[in-house]
Picture (cartoon, rainbow, N blue to C red):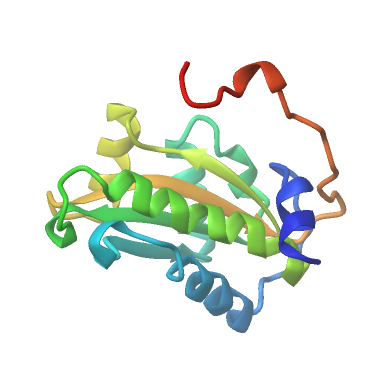
Length: 169
């Protein structure tokens, strides 16, 4: 699958089969996440890989839109570390770029994903910070649910010409 096809067919998949994700595939996804651009090349991200049943179930219970984690083999929480920022406030963009790399790369490893937001919803941020006892400078941005699925992405044309302007609004 080339990059264009991966982008065009990326979809949020919410149903997963009972099959573990191999450690080398997890490492590959995280390696690709860390290839993302970041402001000042500061790479202000950390990742918590969740494959323990109890932890997965606890997180699925804490997040109102992550119930698919009950059935998925894996979750990855993407964290922004504000102490690693060179330019204040850019951690959200930096970590979002890392998330997008995971979402786009996963199908090439025969995996499917769904991005479940945590930040900026205070209640979700607080519950995840408390659960993992995160320091003040580490903020949970998102949970990515990952696994094998019988469903695959498909191409949808979302181009809206009326939203494109040249040289002025």
